[in-house]
Structure formats: C-alpha cells, structure tokens
Amino acid sequence: MATIAQHRVTHSTAFRVRRLRNQILFWSVIALFVIFACFPVYWMFVTTFKEVNDLYNLQNNPLLFHLPPTLDQVRYLFEQTNFAKWVENTAVVGGAVVIITVLICVPAAYALARVRFPGSDSLGIGIFLTYLVPPTLLFLPLSQLVAGFGLNDSKWSLALVYPTFTIPFCTWLLMGFFKNVPREITEAARVDGCSRLGAMFRVVLPLSVPGILTICIFAFTLAMQEYVYALTFVSSSDEKMITLGVVTDLIRGDVFFWGSLMAGALIVSIPVAIVYNLFMDTFVRGITGGALK
View 1 (tube, rainbow, N blue to C red):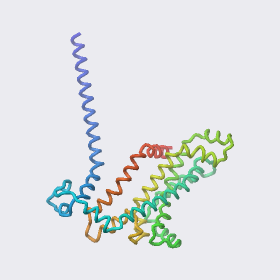
View 2 (tube, rainbow, N blue to C red):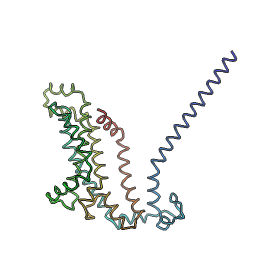
View 3 (cartoon, rainbow, N blue to C red):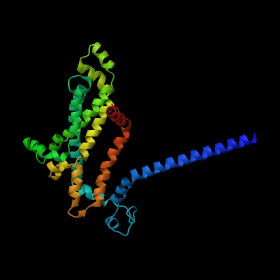
C-alpha cells in the first residue's frame, strides 16, 4: 500500500511539474508575441514625443526619454504640413471606394455564387486572379483613363482607380460567404412570393452582414495604405492621401523629420486599431466564412 501511495504522489508531482512547465512555455510565447507586436507602437510613441536634441543624440538610448517629452513634433505636423487635409482626403476617398466596391461586389458575388450558368466558377477564379496583377503594370494604362476623365492631380482619380484592386478580391471573398447561406432559405423565400432580388435583399444580405462589413473594412484599409497609384496620379499637396503626404512632405532630400513622421503614423494607426478591435469577431467570421468555402 505504501508503494502504491508513493507512486501516486510521484505521478501527481510529475503531473504538476509538467503542467507548470507547459504554462511557463505558453506564457513565454505569448509574452514574446506581445513584445513583438507592441514594440513598433512603443517606438513610434517615444519618437513622437522626444525633443529634437534627444532624438538625434546618438549617445542616448533611443527607447528612453533623456529630456522631458514635448509636443513639438505633433505641433509641426499640424501647423507646418497639410496633415488635416490629408486625413480628410483619405476619409473621402476611402468612403467613396467602399461605396463603389459594395455596390458592385454584392450583386456580382451573389450572381456568381447563387446563379448557375456556364463558366461561373471559372469567371469567379478569373476575377480573383486580376487582384494579383501588380500595380506597376497597370498605372500606365490607368493614367490614360484618368486623363480621359480629366482627373489629373485630383484625389478623385484615386477613387476611380482603387476599385480596380478592391473589387476583385472583395467579390471573391463575398462569393464564398454567399455560398455558405443555405439554398433552402432562398428557395423558401421564393415560394413565399419573393423574386430573386427580393430574396437577396430580404434573406441573404441580412445573413451576410459579417461578410459585407469585412469587405468594407478591407476596401477602406487597402485604399488608405496604397502608395504607388497615389504617387503616380497626385502631386499637389492639397490632394494627397496620408500615406503619400506624410512621406513626401516630411522627407526632404536626406533630411528626415522622424518625430513628425512617427507622429503621423501613430495618429493614423490608433483609430484603425480601435476599429479592428471593435469588429474583430465580425471581421474574422467574414474572412473565414468567405475564404474557406
């Protein structure tokens, strides 16, 4: 009996040691991931509020404040550049791109996912493949399109061009989401007297809100962070987006306004991070629901 009791104690001790080791390993990995994810944000924060003498002193630790924090870098960003105008342009263009993308993607994806016709699957794959075409191959022909509409050096040229890469991927993603909606539901709606469009608006779209919200977030993010087309079609400072304006106006030759650069990046990234966290569950459901089908 003593031997059995000792064996049980030994087994229990080994189990607790193994469990403690697994917990330490788990939390160590989580800690490394958190440090890796938060380090760029911390670096931007420190650089944003450092004084110039502290920022450019190579003897100082770049991760710490050696002089009192200051708002000079943020003040320079708002007073000496068109940062507020860039934010406004980004919101306007991003909103226009989202509206255009949704208006085109929803009926296109619904038709490709729910209506059977020859070549529908191949057409859906072909639409997605157009998303993979590099922008460097398209900005020359697109420049002719922009010139034809008289939108040279205008932010509205970006609202015209950006849907060329948001629509293909969002259509493909929304196709997978529409395919997850059971056909029996739409057939029941048709039996109750709904037309095909009525079934789409009254049944399918309410069930597909996560997917639609996902393509809205995706389209706005792509429009906000795009650089090649913005650099090609816009040169006036008043018409620039944030991504282009911060880089071109705060990098002058070999002079980098690091504090204001980091201030612009930090100010823009905070609301984006908040939106993603608020809608994270919906965004993940939309991505997985569309991409895994």
